[in-house]
Image (cartoon, rainbow, N blue to C red; front, side, top):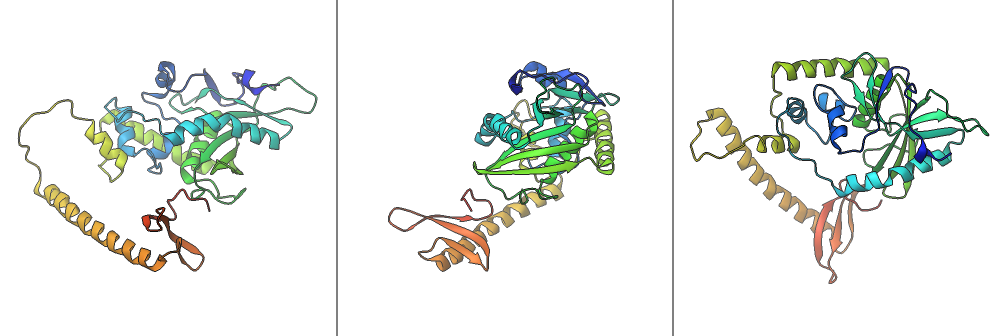
Length: 318
């Protein structure tokens, strides 16, 4: 049976209520995710572990204030395009199980706890074509340009903490106790991981979400942090321009001026450090310390250097 034609049974999750199947980015999609609720993709921001959204930004979003508009990056676009292909690979590796589109759910008792898993996993014994009413577990599909954040294939602690928060929230919302991951790294490195439900972790996340929503209702804004996402949120708050002077606290002015000076000094130090490393590399490609790769050189056609890049954050294939 083709998974494209399957929609989740409304009673597939013992503790979940199916809200529907919505197109990401549509008005209906936004309606079930906005307001005083926390979704699985937001819970890592609540506890300060998301690499994409700060607690500050999420607070503004839930308060109905301006946040920077969503930007479709190439990584997000190709992650969406490849989701079905990676899910199909996981399906091939697990005969006897059927991964079906999940839809958007809320917890039966906690209406503010929302989740949109990638797939619900059903047992499908050989020769049977009817899908059971209740799912066994969840499947989460991910793609990554590099494997820096992921452990070895099958490692118990191989899933990045922000994705662990996401699936722990999903399991807690739906009442399921296992999530499988199918992950494609660098376009060719396929890996699998399993995360089991942990009541202690789930309670920590639930308690943090309740506290966060209380702060939204009370208008208690989180402190400004150093995340780029927070700065983008602050930038979109003004809705006009007045050519006036605004008095600010002296300590905030000093902090800004000192940071500017430190930033300039850091730029100079980084340039000097890059020069030293590049001088060591010479005509080579990589700078290493023992087995640890530090940086790599990209040459121009004439052999001179185009750039020196830190190895850990590069997109160079290992």
